[in-house]
Length: 135
Image (cartoon, rainbow, N blue to C red; front, side, top):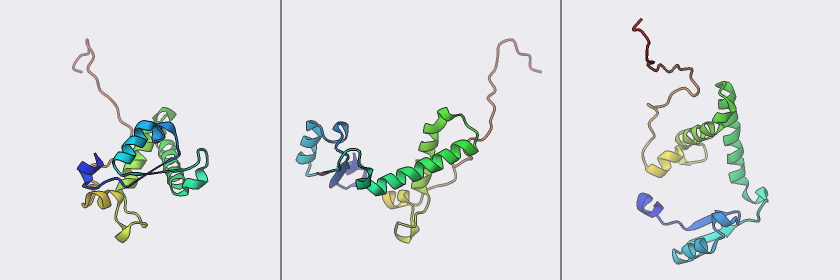
């Protein structure tokens, strides 16, 4: 999929040596047959993956802020994380050259912000009920 969509081959795959993330024999066969270097870290040592751990911390902090500022129930924490990931990928980053967004770097076009709305905005659902009058 990466090769077809982005016209690029995967060169390196990094995982924490978990079975479902590349340690299985099927994954190893796939990596070796496609020339992919599989780099692993020692399980349960986040110190070896500091960049990812820091970004994960940032995403969870912003997700908690969205959740609590919008007064949403805790059961919507997954939607908060997905929303934060979506937004982070579309906002400019000081780490990338010329302060581009990750989306722009990957797709070679600036993202659209026209469809963005307030998160957790109060709304009411009107559903027609049988027996209701027009007034």
